[in-house]
Length: 210
Image (tube, rainbow, N blue to C red; front, top):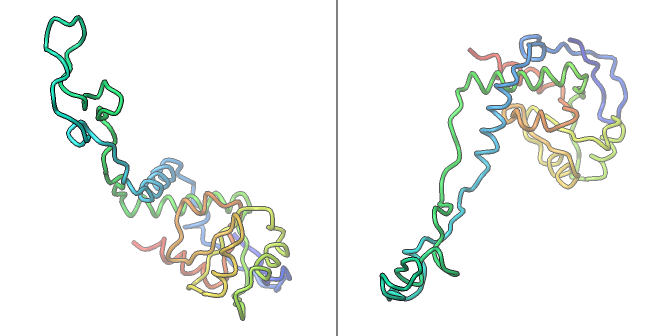
């Protein structure tokens, strides 16, 4: 698949780049995408939720009433879960939500996500560029020049660039990442994926490793 290479101001450079069919042209696997997105979101959870059980509640341990003969249910003390302010039954406890996903499944998921974007013509390629200073206005102008100002975008750099990252950080629905940090969730969440020219070979090498 051939894609025209543009400058960050939207001008055509006259160059074209070939996207590898082994990455951008495969038949997408929806289940692999589902598993990888589920794993990514699970790994973001802190899992620090906690409620107090009856042994952790502050209160008297005195038996409230005699065991039998009252006509009501048995009650041990004021910390009983049936009373207001008592402990919670089977409440949430701290836990780790993350789970392991095989590397081949993750690679297949990322390839599938990129293949979907390629099919939808939602991939743009820019000539390698850099900003002299971190200016949000300059990044916004770039998106406007590419007709992507009102869309969710993911910019993939070959390596981290502080000025570009800081320039795009305050723009809503915009994310900047590097080729070695690209993930299925970010690709699927974006309306359009923007690659700098040098990042494409890095992504292809990363996902085509045996």
